[in-house]
Length: 435
Image (cartoon, rainbow, N blue to C red; front, side):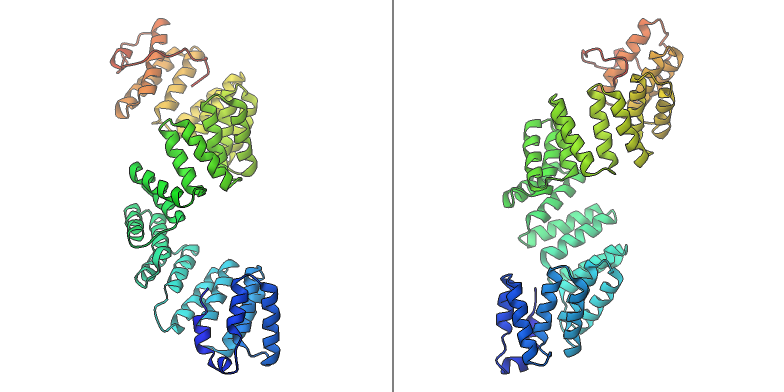
């Protein structure tokens, strides 16, 4: 916390043998009770005109969460010396913590007028206020001003986040690169930059940045979680599990970590542990559609369609347009023998008409209930979609379906893609309602 302006401008107190240094030492050591006693003593000696005592009492109250009382103390400092920007900055910080972003923005602007030199702390705070108010454009301008004024890592990381918020990924990457090359950044900034590189399609650079973040702070939650996702995508389940456990040890209530850990355990066929982790993610975030979706998916794999339907229905209620959730609801209803399964399959196809996975499941549903002509039509649509976006696993499933339709005596001469045109691998026969 900067208090240089108070020390420099309080020359009268220094002439009288000021104890500002002792107040400062008590405060930075965390000896708040002793600090308040000393401040009260100095106030009595100076007839309640000791500005630094007011300032320290405000800082202690702000640290304790008594923000409105802290604002009153800082206002006392302002009345005693209206030209000092430091108490006004502290008032703005308290207002920001109270969620009064517009008032905080106005206070920071007033502090900027009083400041004799460009203050990067004020510019970064203005950018954060503008971001909270939804004015990302002005936030970017102030973040650039803070970076030019020497804001260091904070200004660079804030600029990157604002650019990412408006969809300028290339600009955000450039801002992170500039911050990383000009400053010794913390693990949080490295983790954020690594996650952005992964989103931008540069996994090698992302892996490097995430590794640097974990080398600086082995229990860094965001870096461990992102690196675990990368490892799971590359089928390295054991290493991914180790990273997820590290993320959970740093943040035990992390919904994403519990959910990813449950899905990873599901791939290792540790069903009880997987359901436990996924259930914890739902408990931690009962309004998370993704957590409910993942738990419903795991319950389907564990052949508990009734419980799966309940979880998937709650997920669909939170996000009605999520087509994969609707597809899983259709599968659960089919396993329960419910006639509403057809409506659910059709609803999923309506939400995502160009998704080959959904259309393939719809074709399988038609075939299982005896609507072979409709199944052939859907298989033809799937073949056309796979020509645009090839997928080996879906092509293999389509070949299996067309083979079964051919064995049933259906004429497939009109389909645009036959099973002979696709290189397939031998697959085990699925249950009649499994994807």
